Structure formats: structure tokens, C-alpha cells
Amino acid sequence: MQTMTDDVRAIKSPWQTRLGTTGLVVQGDDALDQFIRVALGAQLDSVPNMQDFGIDWLSIIDLPVEDAIPLLMQGAHRVFRMWIEPRAALNRIEPIQESGHLTARVYYTPAGSDEQRTAEVSP
Image (cartoon, rainbow, N blue to C red):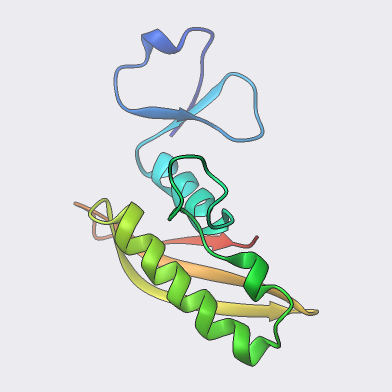
């Protein structure tokens, strides 16, 4: 759910600002979707005081795809274990290569839900 607000103090449940917007916030599963994209798309060691947040995209990005995919999968599993569980269960990760660009489609189920959701991530 996304909400437009001028005063975030009026929002009662956990929320975060919607990336790329002014005045919009996301809550619930939409906030989880956004966090998963941020956590998996962040460069490892790029967030102060959270050195284990993100994937080491810089060491993956120039590798041949057959070498990069296992490192991407390993990094994504680590991020999910450390930063996302127990808010969501990881179902699978599907690496996608299009015109030399490697991304990943992440399938997960939010805690307390039976609905599988999908997030696409890239550096």
C-alpha cells in the first residue's frame, strides 16, 4: 500500500518513504518489496555501520556469466538470511541474463501470507 502524506506522524503502522518520490510512503508488503530490492541491489560494504548489507556486485559485474551466477546466488541467499528473514521466506532466485546484463528475479512469500511475490534486482 502506498500513501501520500504531508505529515508522516499521522501514519500509524511501520512505513518507509517510497524511493524516487516525494511525499509517498509504502507500508506492509510494499515496504517489504522495496526493502528486498534495496538490500539485494546494494553494493556490499556501502552502507555505514552495516558492512554485511548487500551483494558484492563489483566483484561479480565483470565476470563471465557462468562464474557470476553462483556468486550472485550465494550473495542473495546470505542477504536474505541476514536481513530479510523472518519477514519473508525465500522460495527461489532466478538469474536473468539479457544483453550481457545480469539481474535476478527473487520469489518469496511474506510471513503470515500464502501469496508468493516477486522482486527483480540488479546493481
